[in-house]
Length: 307
Image 1 (cartoon, rainbow, N blue to C red):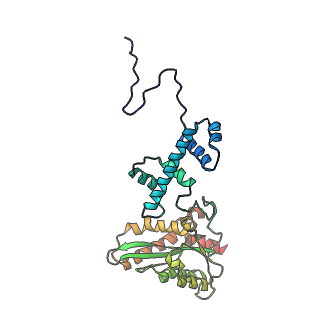
Image 2: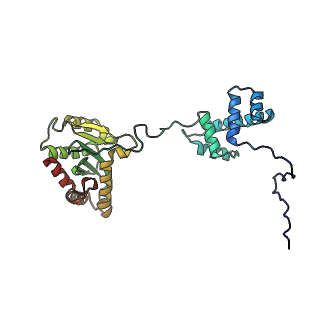
Image 3: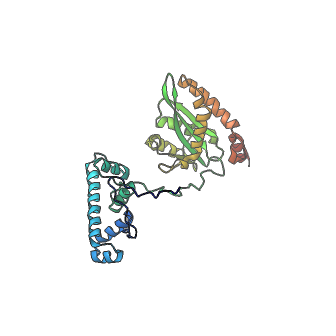
């Protein structure tokens, strides 16, 4: 039994299929239409663009009219929204709410061409986006990193941990816990580290030591900056929004959370301080650092100072 030839079908609202032998008109992509319209808007003659592109002049005029209407609708959406800096996705959604179904890529292209996109930071402006450099040092006490994190206690609520770490040996040279995470709490690891590494506390005792920190409010406070400089340290802030620049202390914070903070349900700040102290002692003496040949921080510091 032979298969019967199927008749072409149409859906409501669609055009019937062309008869055999009838050449279909060329379909133009939205991007190509936009390119031709932009040429017209730049002042090129309609007849010249029509001859070169082989598009009838009336079609070009129609495309131009629709183009300008869409750009006008986008400007109207941006003017009407009560928020600043909305991107093309929300503009496309607001157009859809107004009954204009437009593709997101087309809205993006039009907003970019007419400089309607909100200003934004284009990629990492401060250096290599791959962070291919190094922040570790070849000797102890050339650079320290400092940062803070929070943890919860049942009785005292949210509390703060501040730490300072050496960028060569990864040993914690100073740390502090406090209920109030202000500039004074952030100074305690620096004071402890100076006494630990240099044996005393005084003006210019740590001259030549660089301090890597982020832009947290504690580290841009005058009190913190002035005392760190009084000790002779040089502040080397990380780039905004790039925690890799402070990666040594950031990696320790992950270890602290995974090996201590997340494993306990602290009742009080005093209990948390005791358990954190036990962990840091254990970390400095027993934690193995792969880049140091799987030596502990204490062993790596001792070997470097003895060399």
